[in-house]
Image 1 (cartoon, rainbow, N blue to C red):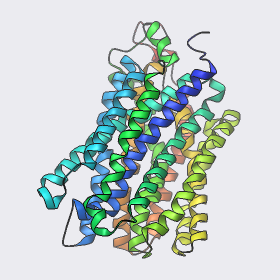
Image 2: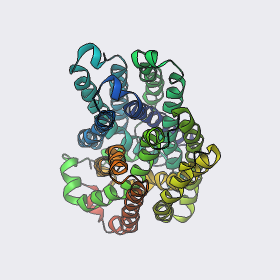
Image 3: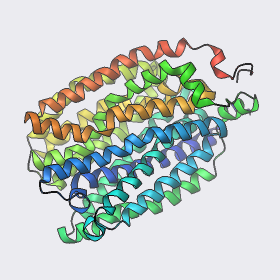
Image 4: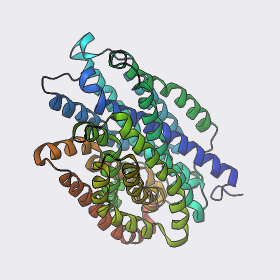
Length: 438
């Protein structure tokens, strides 16, 4: 059996390795987001005005996204030069070390200004790690899978985002039961330190996996680019921009609904964190169930159709979600989350197969990493801080809903033109000048 047609067992193992790593990475990233929303204003960013402290803390959450392009540039370049597997082992270890170190940091009250400075540095390390991890996990999964099942495996992979977010929220729901004094002194550290166990398990799975068959073919044909980072911007720059815009809608959607919503519930609705999580976590299960189903649908009707249809739904759904959320009724709140995540699940599930096929194999890691990462800056990075500012300045949820809908409209338009950008690429993009096509 050739390297380009991997056996079922290796495809399944690659999907597991990608899914487990994605789950760990988003667990770590979500743990920080929750802490930044609920606890870090008191632990690391004390201020006379609680609103100011919260805004500064939420902005530190965004710093991780700003750092992601550096990880995308570095690991995307190395991934197209050295391969997918070794890079994914590195990024997973990097994230684990940074998250564990955050869990061991002294507070502002113990070491003063050095505490938030070190926190931001470690947040940057998290961002650099995730800048390479996300696209690498996608490629490892998709490039191991048979072409007619790539939508399905990509959908499974992206359930790791929801599972990681659920695990992070469950951990915080657990530690939130502690008295405030214990929570602020040592309880908040537990979710960060648990990451060590998850990282070890993830490394065991990844170390036993073979290299991507498609990259192995490229390497065997001598088509590896000497400067993939330069070549992808020179030859596929337009596609990178389109992928960037296509990610914005889902990025803002998931960040507002899984990070900022806890702040919104506390300040605007005067609801406890436990009550908000009681609606959020079951709602996220919709993503876990629906994403693989959307993937199977995409294998039948095409990822572009699924992506654009669900992007269109996300233009409308924020105006349904907020009124249901504002009722404070647990059942109606859960319904709102379920509806919103039903649209988000289909859109985000298409990222692996839809975006990866927009780039040639030899430049795919760099193109995916840069495009997706820049999109997360425009989408995820400062969505909590922007949402908080919009509510503060307008006094109404409508401004936040408009913000979410506008971002989804941008992604919809980008999704409509990705096919043209992909089909316009000549075969010569697969090679360095003079090298044979893979």
